[in-house]
Length: 372
Image (cartoon, rainbow, N blue to C red):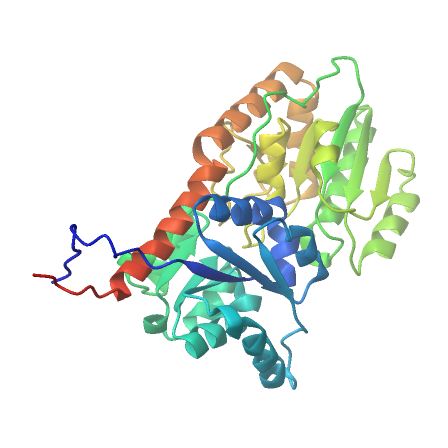
């Protein structure tokens, strides 16, 4: 039986000191959500230290938020580099260690073991689930799922204990302005932030743009990304005489400014990873067109987005055309998606649920003297 004395003024709750491990992929996929989470945890009176091998971690060093830049945890230097991180963390031992995606789980587990801290794993993709399937579930204090579908995979397929699974939806800022067709007579502007990799579907978006041009639609498309397929995609645009309608650019930090100036956000992939860009576009008041997603449950056909019937260029062109020819409908979808973000993806709720998970784990460990 756990007893907490109510007449002992000397009793104070144990401070929650969180070491949050952020790998490169988490930066790529979660973007601004990371900043909102870190700031929100500080507001929840959590001592936050962010650890990463990605230099973007330095941009999150704000006020009480501490950051530690370490060498990549890769074979054959894995053990030696983890030892260096442990030395750097020893002056303020964490009470909870939080790994944000599969690439950070190895370091997070090592930190939790070294300091006898509670281990929390964020689950943001099917790749994360595959990694968790290889781990000892008993070592994990809590799984924080970014979507209901990921929570179901944890419970039904991986047989993770239901009482350790928490649904913590990512928090995003929602604008009061609707960016979609804010200029009624303007040319339709598309935005895509998928990286230029074979499985990301940018080639299918170019197919769709080609079809829309053949159907007589005027539009401009901005492709913000980088990757191994960039030269092939640029050649594809040139060969189809689309250079006047498609612009390539490497992303420079946050996409928020671009989202304020575009009408339709395109997510041309159906991979099993949670990405925050489409959610951020919804919050910015853009209409979203997407291929079906197994993990992004915020994409709801006809409610928060237009979901393509199939993962093809033709289906994508048809979905885009639906919004291009009916701008009122496009603005309705954009407004509904912004309302959905406000209702289900509040930044304060994300931080509060995460901090409450930390505190629940700390309370389960705590023992209190019984005073007479």
